[in-house]
Image (cartoon, rainbow, N blue to C red; front, side, top):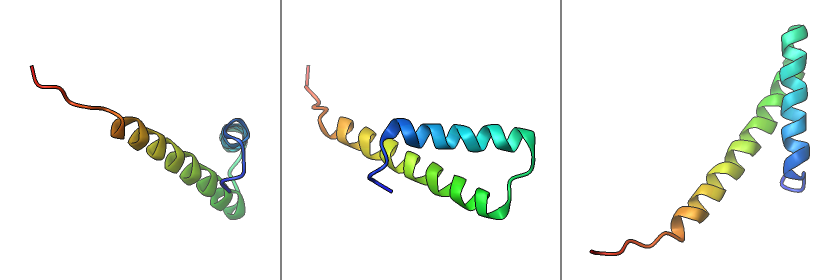
Length: 60
């Protein structure tokens, strides 16, 4: 799933959100939505860790 561009990942999540507002998602759709959400969160966490690893503390 790492090969899916960020924009497409967000679009898929948004599609499932829209569908869930229109009707109840099937169990297969819920599993797929969870997979996309988990991937999205993993990417965000990874990005934040990378950003924080670059932070240096300076004493005054």
